Length: 392
Image (cartoon, rainbow, N blue to C red; front, top):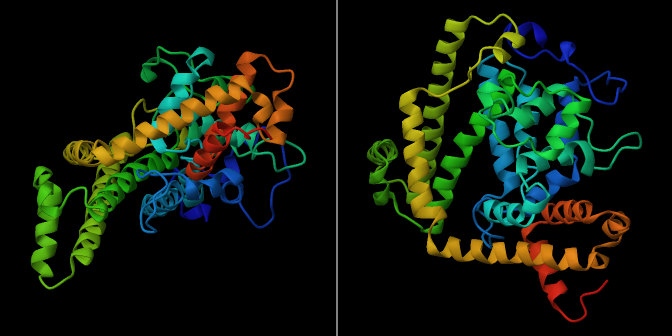
C-alpha cells in the first residue's frame, strides 16, 4: 500500500506511463503488471536453459540465468520492503535484468560483440531493452511488453547514469537505448530510482554467493582455500564451530546464507546513513543526488571485491571452465558467420524478416536470433549448420 511507502519511494500513481497508452488494470498496479508481463515472456522462459557459469550444466543443482534471476528478485524484494520502497517495481527490474544475455554467459556475449563490431557491437544491457520494447511480440497493439517508464529506466540505468558528466561515457549510446530514448526520454543523465539501485546490488549479492556455493559443489576449490578471503573463511569457521557435527553441505549452505544476510544488513545500514544525510523528500530527489543512495559501506565493498577476485581466479579462470568458454566463443562466432552468409538457413519467421534488409540490418537480425538461443539450442543449431543437410 502506498501509504506505507517512504516519501522517496517510487509511487505507481505518479508513474510516467507507458510508450503506448493502455487502460490500467482494476486489480493490479502498473508495476505488478510489468512484473507479470516479464514472467510470462518468452525471453524469461529461455533463461531456464541459459548458463550462469557452467555451460549447459549436466547437474540439476547448478544455477542457470533463471534461478539466478529468481534469487535476485527475492533479495531485491526483501531489501525494498525494509527500505519501504515499491517491492513490485524492484522485483520487476530484478527479474528483467538478465533477459538480454546470450547463450554461454559472458563468453557468448564477448563473441557476439566481436563479430558485431562493424555494426555497433553487442551489449546485453541494450539487448535487454531490445527484448522489452521490440523482440517480444505477444500483444496485438504493440511490439515488446510496453512496460512503464520506471521499469525501463531501472533496467537501462541500474548501474548509474548513461549520459552526462557523471556517466563518464565517451562511447556512443547503444543503438536500442539511443533510439528508444528519443521516443520515451529515460533521463539517461540522472541516477535511477531507489528500486533500481536495490535490484542492481541484489544482483551482486546473489551472484557472488551463489557462485561461491556452485564452485564448492563443483569441487573447483574447497573451504580451506577460502583462507584467501578472510571474511568468508571466518564465517565458515564460526559456523563449523557452532555445528561441529553438521554435514559439509549444511555447513556450506548455513555459511552462504549468513554471508548474504551480512551483506544485506550492511547495505541497509549504509543506505540508512545516506538517506539521513541527504533527507530526500521525493523519488526525484534520489535521482538528482548525483551519487548512489543504495550502497554498501566501504568496508563491505572491499570484502565484495576480495570475493570477486577469488572467484575470478579459482572458478571463472579454471581450466575446465575456460575450455568450455573457448568452445562457446567458437560456436557463437561460427553460427554468426554461417547465418550471415546464408540467411536462408534461418528459421521461417526469422528468414522472412531478413528479406530486403541491408547488411547492417541482417547482422542485427542474426545477432538477435543467436542472442535468444539457449545453450543447448545454440549447440544443436551449430551442428545442424555444419552438416551437409543443414538447409531448412
